[in-house]
Image 1 (cartoon, helix red, strand yellow):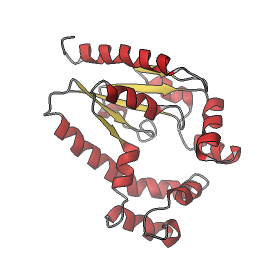
Image 2: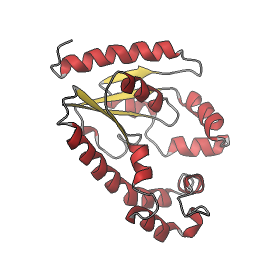
Image 3: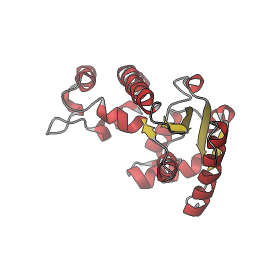
Image 4: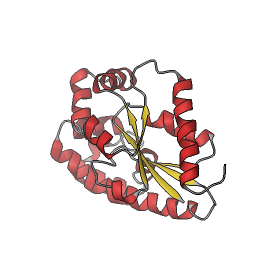
Length: 206
């Protein structure tokens, strides 16, 4: 089974592209979803986060306050690195387990959505790297609108990631989502073309 690593900067449209692949019957493992699972109440992941950052990162019902934690780690490099040391090994182990299970189900390829794929040096773990690309000014606008953060906070989030050109240099394939009004049909057409390509590369007859 061909393994595709999908990445892109914050608010580039990774989830949108992943949904199009899911609609084509392709299994998707999303690192953001997994990160919630490994830090849910009762897990050692959440316990490690609380030990590192204190109970101020919890909501009243004991779940992780992701907004408060995000605000903290994207403004403090050492805090971000601490969180990554806690979460990344757990996320990677869970994704590997899910990937191994899916390998026996006969899918032509698998899509793994990993926002920090480049930053965590995981390109060698995948057969192809698919980048969802958008200019930084577009990402900034989307972040402010989507997450309700101010421009300095959006800039801090972008600065904590690889820049656009680092991602593009690592890419085998690219989906362009470069403005705020890219039609859904344009994304769908790019996804359909890539789906055909990946099926051919996997040896699946079309």
